[in-house]
Image 1 (cartoon, one colour):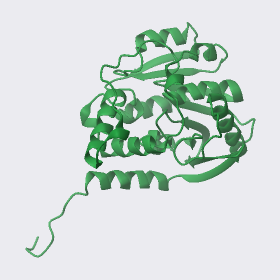
Image 2 (tube, one colour):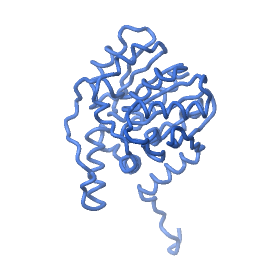
Image 3 (tube, helix red, strand yellow):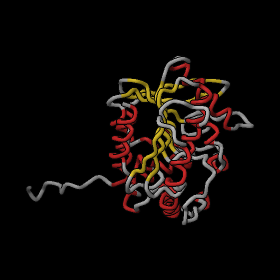
Image 4 (cartoon, helix red, strand yellow):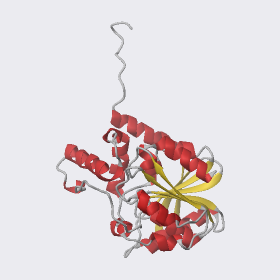
Length: 287
């Protein structure tokens, strides 16, 4: 290298995160579908049998940002920003879970057809939504629930969340977001990278639906009792929102078509923190 040539530099982590998000977005096709006065933004990607992915409570389709490429290699993914989340429209007041599920279901049917069989996966609050959707819509061939809410049993959370909205300035805001990721979402501080912060920040700033009380409630077992398809329950080994060894066997309930798994080395956001093992698990389950 001559003295006049610039020294190569690595892109800033924030730039790398933005580039990664943009690259995954470029793999998707946007579909805006209206129902009952609310427009839901869906994204599709890949080819193969349809697989619907529902995000968590402070989330958007980007909760699956590290899974899209792998899962799209075998499936046509359908990923909404559920109504009142992300880039979708806001549900009219008073908006509750039945309206959210009905709007998500109706807009999916307008894209695929009401009787079209789908695989369905949901993360966290999205797991509770997925179970409701499976009961409400039917035609779900397989159901995967990752760190699903709605069990109503004690959490293992040791760190309190902070109110990021009260942060004084950009650095304080980023520190609060990282704190909350460590408190709830990710087990290993080394995994709280620029991409995780970017996804989490976008979700926090665009969420307009109050899901916390619903997530802490306990309706899931009653929903599962209405379902007969193969179901996978999965948690990160260190998920603070549940004790997998307690909830897993309870939800399996001796049913041969059900199984529960733990993703080693992961916290609540297992499909992000341990994307490789989570992708392999999901590809195996959905075939």
